[in-house]
Each structure stands twice: as C-alpha cells, then as structure tokens.
Image (cartoon, rainbow, N blue to C red; front, side, top):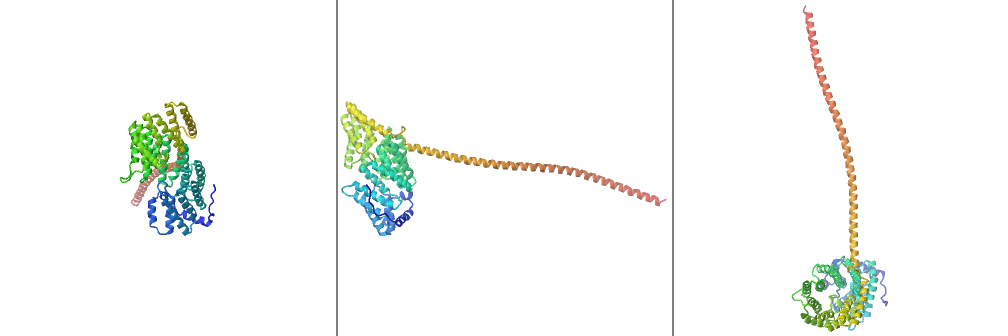
Length: 523
C-alpha cells in the first residue's frame, strides 16, 4: 500500500544532513564498535550534538537478537528530541522509528501497521539522501516473515538492492543480499541462497569484520542444510576464528552446526565434542540459556541415536520438548534447526514403534509446511513414505512418495549436481581471470624489459664495435709509429756513424794540412 509521508525536506535540509553524514567514516571501526562501549561514552556526554551522534551510531549497530525493545525505545525517543531541539531534519524519520517501537511493544501486534511504519521511516530517510539503515531493513524482513509473506520480502529487497547499489551504500546492499539469501534458503534453493550470502560476505569484508565472519557461518550452515557437509565445514571453522572474542550466541551456534556436520559425515566423537562445546558456558559463573539448552539436547539425542544408544535418549527429548513448548522454538532459527519431532520419530523407529514414529513424522511435516521449510519438508515426506511402507500402508506411502518426487523436482530445478553454489564457480572463474590478467601484465612487462634489454645490448654491442674499431686504429697507429721509430733509430745511428766518419776524415785532413805546412816551412 502507498505510504503517505510528510512534506519533502528542503534542499537546504538535505544538504545539511548530507554534510553531517559525510563527516562520518563508515568503516570497520564504525561498524565493529561495541554497543556497551558506546553506551558508556553516551553516559558521559553532555552536548546535544555529541549525544545525537552517539545515539545514531547505536541505532545503526542495533542487534535484534540481543537488544531489548524498551531500551531501544528510550534511546530513539531521546534521539528524536535532540534532533528536534537542534533543528535537524532527521527528526521526522526518527519520529517514525519511535512509532514503530511503540507498535512493536503493544500487547497486540498489528503487523501490517508495523510494516507500514517501518516503510514510512525508510522513505523519510531516503528523502534525506543516502545513508545506512540496517535496523530498518532487518525489521522489514522480520515483519514480512511474521506476516508469512516471503514474496513480499523477495520483491522489496530485490528493488532495494538496485537502489542501494545505485547509491553506492555498501552496508545496505550487503543487508539486502543477506535478506535475499534468507528468502531463497527458506525455499530450499540453496544454490541461490548461498550465492546471495557470498555476495553479502564480499561486501561485509570491506566494512565490518564481525558481519563478515557471521556471514561465513551462515554460508556454512546453508551448505550443511544442502547436504554438502564437507564444503560447509571450512566456512564454519573459519567463522570460529573471528578476531577477538566472538559473541556467545554466535560461538554456540557455530559449534552446534559443526557438530551436526560431523554427525552427518559419521564423525560421531567429533559431533559429541563440538556439541559439548556449544553447551558449555563461556564463563564459569554463566548459565546456559534455555533456548540453547533445548537445541543442544535435540542435537545430543540425534548423535546418541546414530551411535545406537536409544535407551539414553528419552529423558533428553522429554526435557527438550518441555523447553520447546514453553519457548515456542521454531523449526529453523538463528540458532540452527530444531528438528525435535523428527528426532522423536527416529527415536521411536529405533525402538521399533512404527505407529508412534509415523505420528511424529506427520507432526514434523506439519511444522515444516507451516514454516515453509521446503528442504526439511522433502526429508520428512521421504521418511513418511518409508514408514508407511513398513506399516503396510502402500496407498499412503505412494501419496507421500509422489509428493516427495514433485517437491524434489521443484527443488532440483534450481540446484546443481555438485551442490556447490554457482557463485563459487563464478568467483573461481573471476579469480582465474584475475590470475591470467596478472600473468598477461607480467608477460607484457617482461616483454618490454626484454625489448629494452635488447636495445641496451644493441647499444652496448655497437659501442663495443666502435671501441674495437678504435682499438684497431690505435693498434695500427701504434704499430706504424713503432716502425717509424725503428726506422728513425736506424737512420739516427747511420747519421751518427757518418758524423763520426766525417770527424775522422776532418781530423785526417787537418793532420795532412799540418804535415804539409810543416814540410813546406822546413826545407
């Protein structure tokens, strides 16, 4: 239905809001901040602008699995009052957020009104321009799920994803991918579900470490539900390596799903070990919440049945049933699957009590239909077909068998034989293309370097050739000079010999004239 909102904010108000938004860096430090630390900071702040900034940060970091609505309402009311006092335009969307909180706390929930109020708040924020709104997006998904309108979620988040991609809002786009993954997961289309969650993980990796590792855990869970336990285990185990101290609930869920994967692979001791880790409080003084206790009991019962120990299972299942009835635990939740009725059915089958097993399988199937869990519904239809056949009810067995075949055809149409999401193949292909491009760039650089070296070598050879020619000339010049020097030396020696001879002749001449003169003077 169309949402009638307030008058559109002025261009000046939009610019004011955007200027303040641009001063905030939405990076890992922002998105991985501790809510408790922020509330301690808030307690010491006096200035209205600082308090509103911290309250807005808390609003963005709201964890629906941990926060209490009355506490959130008080924070949102203060944020609205501060925005109004400061004359900030976000007072209008905050007014809608407060109205949503009040509707969500009402004794009787008016889900359509809640959804419309959430959409009105989102529309009011959109009028102010780009900004992160994970709280509103997550509540819209939760409300549509409570209204049992999964197609409304698919349509809304598909449109919203295109909008967020156009705006370049990484966090909102990642949330949209996550919600689409939930939609496809509920349908049993694990190929699409895992592909959407992988896209979300890629975006979360750039802005939030916690959400990135949380998404890895969700991908591992989906792979185990799909039946590819070996593929799911690395994702689950990597999720447990989250830097710092993982949230308690996340730690328990990851250990429980790893236990389930090991159970399906026949690693029963490992399954028991990880389930025990999930059941053990992180601190000695802490107690295990009843919700986690119930899921752990169902898991332990399934492992013991696989080990052929049905005698110890009944008291565990009775306690789990009491907790599940009081807490209204769904078949599938953030904590994993709670296949309580199916485990009862397996217990009765282990005892040879086929009639009770049949009743339990029928109860499990009704729950799977109610919660629209297609993959589990297929498992239960097959189990009912086999149980009816054992009971001598071929007509009923055929009915369940045909229903299972029809559902299997629907599910398999969207799956791949390897039970690996197509997006992983696309990721591998992109990585291969990147490696090839890297090799091509390296090859181009090498070719350029070789060409440059060839030019340099050519220049060097030309220089060497020139030097060789010059050396030859110098050698020939030196050789000619040596010859000339030898000739000159010979000629000098000859001249010296001739001069000596002339001196001797001159002396002889002088002697002759002296003798002649003497003879003439002496008759």
